Length: 272
Image (cartoon, rainbow, N blue to C red):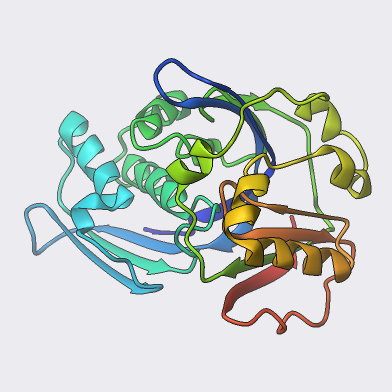
């Protein structure tokens, strides 16, 4: 079975309060985009557990720590599914704020559910995905949603950016998510993100913010330079995604010169 786990961007990200359990409550909109990995899962004829191999962007560390393998372990424990061979072509950058690892895990759950006819409902799949990470459940239904709580409470929204163009720029910088949270002063926005997102895209610049930008830009000014350059290229709206380090721009027409971002991952295209 061949799947294409896609990335997401955050449209706005408000850190509204610190919780007693040490986590933070947030408000954001997850919007799926076309950039994707390639995941192949097949029943194994050669191993009793699983085999895992990857190509594309290098994946460091033990495969047992990969969310794809953790998703397999999670379902195998509950449903006693057979061994599988897993092939991953990694194309979504790591530590980019694009949800690549979370998407891989969610699509793995969906693949195993279909491959072995487990008949797990989407609601239960979301519950299983939440055990793997706060961002994982959003990729089960894979639609634009308003997220609150720690990013795990979803409210469907009517939002389409079809016809706009997206440009993604990720510098060779890794931003630690715990570090990013530790430097943010939680506060509720003056205007609800659900209201702000209904405005024309060209007005988002004044009202839709990513609370991580202030501290991340202070520690990594190169990321702020990228955002400013994207606006200079004519973006209607530009923002860091998640806690970084990817910055994206939304355009009416695709900019021609995107080769000025040295040592960066660059991707773009028409939004659907």
